[in-house]
View 1: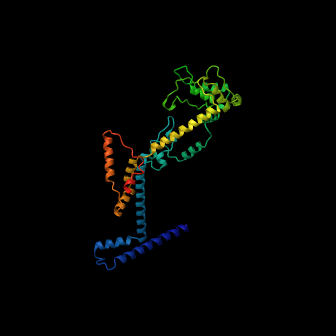
View 2: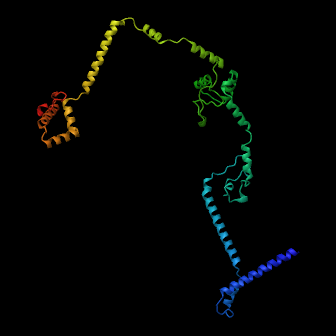
Length: 356
């Protein structure tokens, strides 16, 4: 009981302090105000000032500010939900699964507005359970798949191979009795297995190989030792040397109209061969050499020689080329008329007469 009395006294003291503070505020604000005791409006204004408390007003302003901030935050959250909601795909429920056992994807992002009416669960503990199931041991199908991945053809015998072929190719419906060449090649190379796919088939588009995937009659699977022995036997076979290969081809040549290779015939052939090479080289040089006319035209086209001519004209040492140009024009006219062109040589002595 004493504690209650103390609390009551504290509350009364706080109430008196607030009233005193309000009276002081009202007195300060109504200082110099006329007709305090006559006008009813002025008296109401004074009473309203007395009821006001500065601390209470501050609390009210703070509460209003918080409410405005909360409203702005809610508005921003709604705007964000409008932007994010269309990008989320529609949540699907597998056949025979309770929707309440699936966590709502909108609730996970804080965007679900349905509340209790949502058909999906709003229990965040489902995420932890899902994470545990991911870390759980493999299922029977996964175990079987992992075992098949490790079960390669290297460890099979012929009986195991026939068993795998029978199981794997059980649902096939070939349209011919021919055996697929890719299947035989994969078996012989040791590449066949549980997950081998034929190049003629396309499982994604539902296309199957039209040939049979069965072992032909009389097929015998070679063991590792047999393959090793065959490889050693192939390597140990005598191989032909270069001399033996040449001699064998020489024996296959016709025996008639052949020149025997002696020292004299070889020297004659070597001499003729060198002569042919020299003639060929000379012909290429002749074809590549420029005629006198081409040299002169090239000289006129070159900017350096044009500048040289201009410099010579300034110095008074220029050569009069008008007659030479007329001769070239006459040659061009003859060419147009179908006449033969005179050869002026390589053009090295073209300017000797003019400069002498």
